[in-house]
Length: 541
Image (cartoon, rainbow, N blue to C red; front, side):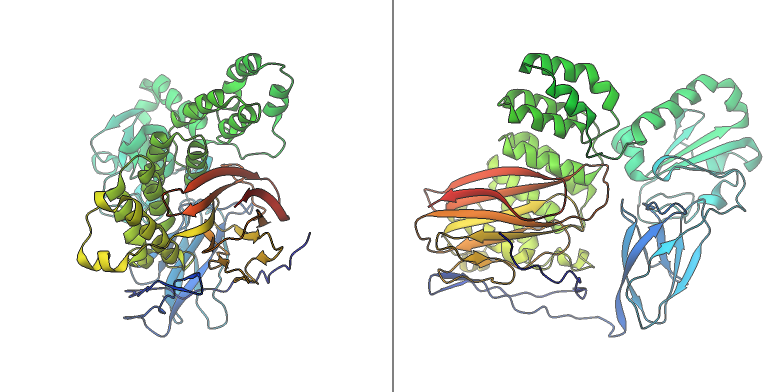
């Protein structure tokens, strides 16, 4: 069965600043109708626009934590783990692209393009620059080599994206003093700068503003053993291997005949794959398919014990914990995602929905309301979450309907949030950013509800199509007809190998949504490759 493919040219959305949105729900002809007034933009220069792109090194690998600054100003941004960035700039601005150990590139903005991709080249003029794992740099030029180059790390009086001081390590030992202030350049043999993400992987939250690691000429000799031990820890914890579709560890486990022997084999090989974060997710799936959910949960718990700082991997872990109904653990995981990605509305929504499952109804309401009232849209400069406020409104209305007596509401909220019960609701979320997945639902009459047929004859409706971000996409039907409903997705893979492994899709299906007899089912699906019209579930009404 093939459905029409959509035009894959992504339409860029304008930035939303100081947005005022009014949502008035109605039910017309048994359909849930949630019209959204167009955003009112204020304080926006008509010549300003979004410039976005990707920064890579000389080998075409992404540069996470690189800095992009508008020349002559302090306005700037940094790249994400995939080397991607987005910045609001004027047509006459000049952007400065920089990364420690690499030569800067200046690029003037013209009127013909909104995408600027940059390839940086190593700066041969820097003395003894060594590029190591995931953004770790070393240079004898000390402050000059790193000042203004590493996003999220403060050095001396230089402040980029954090108000906190980095963690200082001198000759393998944590120090309270800034080495650039207490040591002369002649005394320093080498200096490493770890980004916040990599610093946390090594030292926990005390390194949330990055790490400055200094080896002195004197300490290089006297503290050789301690320094070598630290170097080994850096290699072990930060040089993560990219997930590979050809997973040899699953082939090893498949040779075992019983759950007990397979688990013993897992324990035996676990240390060999410590640097493959998706290993635990893959192995948990292995045991779940063999009807041993207890073992699968135990393995996921092993992953929780690892210091998780890859938000996509952490988000996938949250999905799996929800699937196994380990809601208390899921809350802990989603709190970590919010800490890692506070600029993304989906981080708040994931945690809000998890809070409800453990009875924290007020916390759930407060986070969802932040999304609905547009408070978080100012952080969504690229507009990739436009439309999530409508989905949050539906979830708020249900939350108030079911748990309203345990939630404090003001009069405006009481008047706004009225019951919106529906017979059928399906929602999909996924863990990889910049991945396009389309939700399709086939009703018992055979009609398909999808982006090109967003309203069906029996009243089914598909939400706005998310071509970027993590979703969500939603199907709702006010009055269902009897029969089987098939849930399918069309997966446009991003074709990028991820440390966090394959894309993990979470599918949540409801019948009698928002009613006393509501039934909810959550499944997770591993998406290894681009695939059309893939059936991922079904239910009967």
